[in-house]
Length: 264
Image 1 (tube, rainbow, N blue to C red):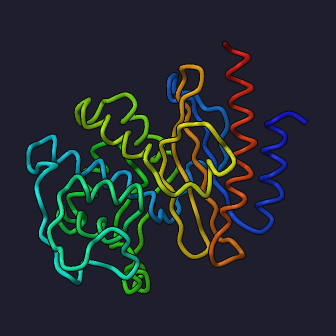
Image 2: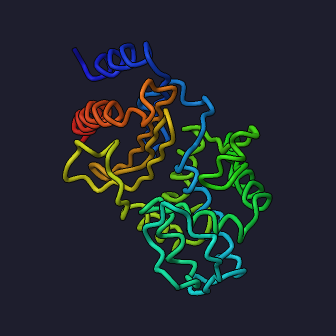
Image 3: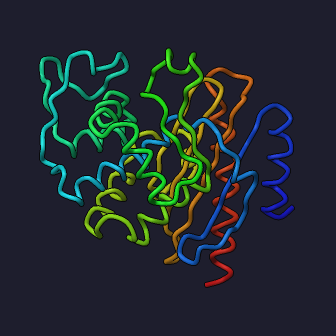
């Protein structure tokens, strides 16, 4: 059985109990290596923090804010899942907030940045960079908003666009694109795509909510940059199905590695 058949077989078994979207692309030459329902729109969870980061860095590029600028926060801005904020300190610089939002998936940092920019400005920027399916309707952990029918959405196609913009440096400045990429490389949550893929430098962002989880990112192999995006939702288990993303990604990486070696 070749790798494509293995991927197809895994999906066939998986979709009997849950929904899945996959997109694998060579970013260097913008070609699709494999896709499955990559245009479907789903609840984004924390992977929407990638375009939020880009929106904030766009403000830095336009000199509306400096990375060193400190934002004053209220004690109520620090959520119950906080891992980054120190007790009694209510000023944090923009660079730290962006970094924590990505590498620790810190929801307090994210909400502070969302409030700083405003939903309308963030969503306007999403459209400006070509994100057709990505929409921010609520703050992180805002269960009241969810009950009212508001949520945050994206697609794997849009996530690919974010990484392509960063790699090609066709948004922001070269320096800020490099900053974004370096932050993504420092990701501390590695329980999905790269759980079983060792010795590979992977720039990515995970996301999870009840009954869903996603992971999107890029890595370099034989001087080519590859994107992997996987989203699983409507899972039977409340904490999602990260194990399936990890196992499927191991097959996908072997497929990319095999393909890359044949062409080099």
